[in-house]
Amino acid sequence: MALVVQKFGGSSVADPDRIKRVARRVVDTKEQGNQVVVIVSAMGDTTDDLISLARQITTKPKSREMDMLLATGEQISIALLAMAIDELGHPVVSLTGPQVGIVTEPVHGKAKILAISPERLRQELNGGNIIIVAGFQGATNTGEITTLGRGGSDTTAVGVAACLHADVCEIFTDVDGVYTADPRVVPQARKLEAVTYDEMLELASLGAQVLHPRAVELGKEYQIPIRVRSSFNYHAGTLVQEGSSSMEKEIMVSGVAYDVNVAKIALFDVPDQPGIAYRLFKALADERVNVDMIIQSAKRNHTNDISFTVVQDDLGTAVKVVERIKAEIGAGDFIFDDGVAKVSIVGAGMITRPGVAAMMFEALADAGINIEMISTSEVKVSCVVKGDQIKQAVQVVHAKFDLAAD
Ligand code: ASP
Ligand code: MG
Picture 1 (cartoon, rainbow, N blue to C red):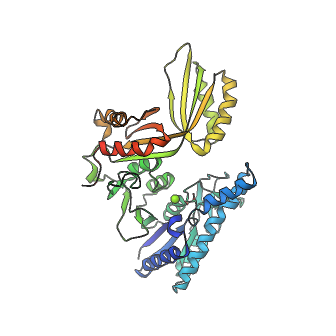
Picture 2: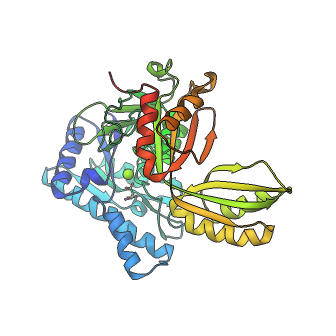
Picture 3: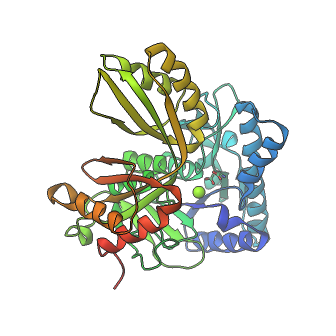
């Protein structure tokens, strides 16, 4: 008997028919002789709808109340899915994050999971129940409701799988697995049979929408095999696990990722002195702003220009911090732009092959796409481009590296 954790995203439970279909699938897994724990997201666009409701009340909702509001989305889907499974005649119980004992840091909006207690889950499984757990939520150890950040249900799923030493964590989504590029942007993209946690981490954090990066990190840490598969068919999907994805070894670039949730800030005429970058980025870190690319230009007249990218949701906070720090460090003006996006090539074999970055730049140049920022690492090359050119950028880069299915 295996212990299977399954996670269904918002699109898989978007309406009553889909919820019934998910129920059938969960019951099939149970009837094959497995113990099953299911994590669900809020139905369809519920989370977005709740956010827009709040915005109609206030432009500055308290983050505590935001979590109180957003956590209700998942509570709807666990109850409905449990009802659907009950209809199929199987013992089932729905549990909120706090009921499971998912303890998070005392941070609202993007809390990290500190611990999950296995007791309640074990007790329900031993009682023969299928368990339906609300994704994306937990509580602090003083009982305040928190959420894990957008897309956080994946993290709940892998966290629960780790806590129970599950045999596999299946992430059901609206695509067949992990592709060489988003198939909605590049229809010829090829599905990957297997990827390593590290490859997936790059693809996920670069905006391949299929898996939340924190979930991949957690999977790697606890060595939980994660299978990404479609909730609309029975294809095997893509297995994310340790070790080499041998099929991909000879290929220098395994995928093209993109991220539109990017904003750029450029601060000009920053004094060229020790401690300046520290003060700026420490202040941003203190406000929990996620900074991604950082570029400091060559100095001229004893000053530097520093530009960096943040996730779009953090732009407001980042602008406030820069506004304050700019005066403290005696920097000049700054600009920001949320109309940008990032395209990246990912591949473990890249570092040993000269000219890979140039090939990417050539593809963009041939398409007349201007590159605003570039960053490279051992496993990726990323370019920031205008947001309205991002789809074309992904397509031309994907074609350049010949990643399409035969
Ligand atoms: N419902 C949350 C969101 O839309 C969490 C999730 O779906 O993973 O971000
Ligand atoms: Mg999601």
